[in-house]
Image (cartoon, rainbow, N blue to C red; front, top):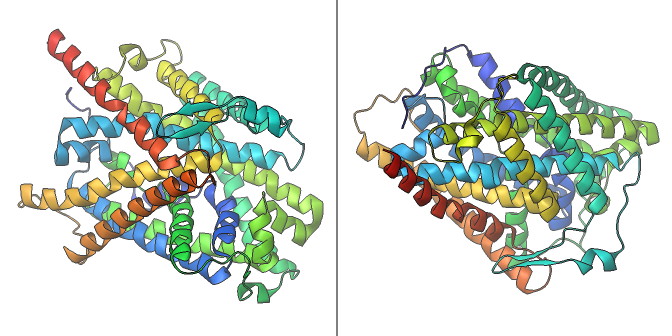
Length: 478
């Protein structure tokens, strides 16, 4: 592996917290509460799902904080995986970031922006007969319906093209655009929480009123809670982005773990408040049937104009998350290509714009394919399953590093070792098994036409032959 370049440590504690919060708060909070309401049918169960997912996320982020403070090198989990398991698993993680994690995340959140734009104009859509007429069957995965919701998909691809074009032409311009989108995110969340409660048009009885026609019981409730937590985990995902920049953080031994834990706690509180404001405005039954739950809540409080303002701010907020992923994610692919672990042309810097142009184009093409393949739920559930599959390995890797490198300096150590990491390990494994069970059973029963988690695993596994191919090429060229 080529010698890693050294970056200046310019990121302070407050900046690190801001990066964590900005990385986490994206699109999920504007869609997931409606899905959670439809799964659970109970306001208090929705809040319980946020708490479970939040505690689980904090336990996991504490593990990442120990490893990140111990090895504060730019590259994050990519570096951790190599130290824990070797080059093969590091490569597979890097490949998964291209094939599933970053690209499916970018495609999925941009899908939300296109859906919220339907508040202003109706996008064209084929009839159900035409949508079903073209079906691509993937063995052991399910069926892809490329013509389904085609108008939203085409708008999503167009928005991804615009973000890619901006990042392709200028990294600096992409950063300026990011500031604008971040301001819109703050306004959207502030208006949702403060505006909805201040309107006085809601009903506090919504917090205790359940919908018996939706609320499951017994084992079905367990499955529904796992599915709801899956959505909450997707909305809380992203805190680890700061670990990618660990080599640029001042005093990483203290700043990394503190910023990770405090930043995630702040996001949890914000999400609970946003959900509470929606529950205040909409009974759980109305939330469950809402396609644009944040705008519907704002419409109930402020009328059509108010709902439109919230929809516009949400679009800008979501585009901010898209812009960040489009801008940053291709850097991993670019770095892998420089290491001759990816096609060499993906590691070429644009001679004029000084951007990873080819890697950006490659990511855009793949994100467009993923958009055509599914919806927001498919893409989001697929990538979050793969994220937590690798998180499971990182949690177990903590025990490997404690044994392999017992004398290494650890500025931060996980609280409650070994029991807390073991609890996180068990919960992670249980969660993954239950998600797999739900996906497979829903597919067999005909409730869904594709198994999201299996789709993600298949795409990740495609990196295995690629690893051996590039390793063989490197050996021949050595």
